[in-house]
Length: 36
Image (cartoon, rainbow, N blue to C red; front, top):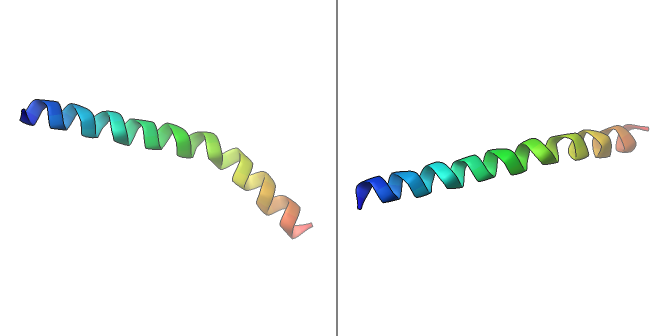
């Protein structure tokens, strides 16, 4: 069961990282628009 939990945790963290990585460009554009 421990291995399953570790696998789930790894998948969850990987999913969060990919989501954040995809959102970074959008956040940068938003910040640039706000500065202008």
